[in-house]
Length: 486
Image 1 (tube, one colour):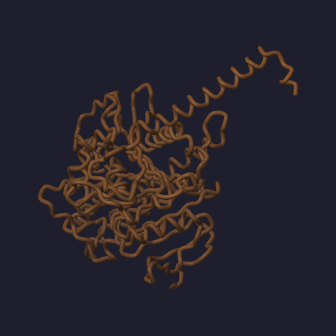
Image 2: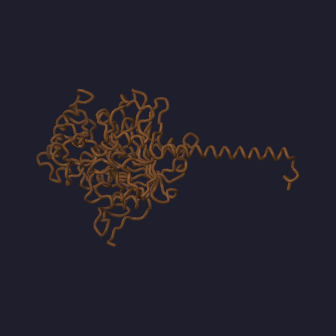
Image 3: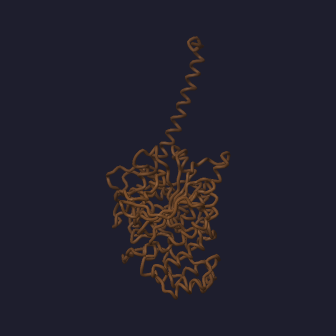
């Protein structure tokens, strides 16, 4: 009633204020929408016409001063994306692409064809359960780049990778603000066994200071065949090779005698003994000991990180006798690397993908794995078990899974370090079932669940995609994996 008798000038001013507010809101929404539309992927060469897949790709700056940017690929969930959680996937290496492995070989909705000429739909994609985000990290991996040359000369290490990943996540959420309050999980495998808990710890710690850092709604993480603790991982590697008839009794006894895996630097005798073990793996795939190896004559898969030990030990310094051995990339495929590299090096694919468009000075071809990162990486973190103890106490949901035919990060070593956490047992070791067959084994502790996947290697979703989909469904939904025949 007051407004009916109000002065016209007052009404005019009020209307102008309201109009300005509406215009401001429209501008903000338009800006957010333009970010998304700029990065939306349209007409990706070789993408199947159905079903429809909504996806985005591009760069997120993680260091303004250096012009350092990480490349991402994001898929909205297949159905009800506004009600599904956000899942970040990280591969390891160090130096391997989460797009080249996780996205187009394992859990993404678009899988690389076996001749590299296009993509096909993945019936078992995890985007049925979550909005999927893949990032190529650290800088120098895949399409990720820096405009500062010294960034390529910097010896990378876990803390730097975690900091860049955190900055990526914060800035990506600024670009996609509708996911800021969404339940957030991290997943991955292999050397992601370092990346994932370290990033989770950074988010966990910084969430405590909301005045300084934006809140990220982290709920937990799940990691497969994870590089976790050097002592238990290497002890398990040797025991697995012997128990699965890869090495002789004499080799096993020798390695036990000369190797002290509790030390961060190995003796020359230990390096020789371990070299012999890896040499016996040369004719089979250490990442899936019962699977065929890639036999493409032109395949880069035959040399991704598979340099002889003596060569690897000499890289970076002359003190090769005591340099801790890192032989292989923590990644597996029979020939998929070759197919992915053929596809992502196409100009039309890169154009549709918004790749190499922001002044990238690193003109090297796209590779699934960057050997130079592996060679120079500073493996300064011996164990991430203290992080597990901290985050379990902090209430995060944590699952570990192991493909039981992986010889590189074998189930034996993972069982050792899970038990070393000293957690209270909730439910004992038992079978879980998938399609009326034993899918693997499961054991539940207070704060951690450990699952094995029967017949899977280092990349569980590649070898057992249906079982892997059941696994992530159970993890995200809170439903138990079935421990009885249906």
